[in-house]
Length: 100
Image (cartoon, rainbow, N blue to C red; front, side):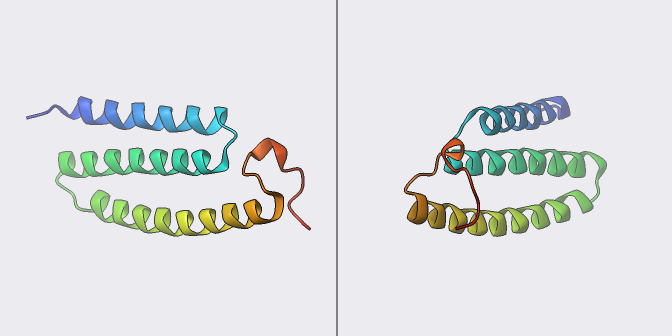
């Protein structure tokens, strides 16, 4: 059986990788993927603690987080496609204004 600390360390490492990727990359699609990676790292932690404490609330909460992540991905991809159609780029440092 894998110890609890390994799962928590995996969640922390994935969250740190996602955070560093979000802060260093300028491609908006990669930034969206890094946000998804951070949300999945939190889900790993929720499920791990739920299993460790013999409580189902962490698993239920991770299902809600996955639902919000799916909605965030849909809205984020729609925004990225619209920006690419209007500005012909998805680099965040090249986009100066949000409106028209």
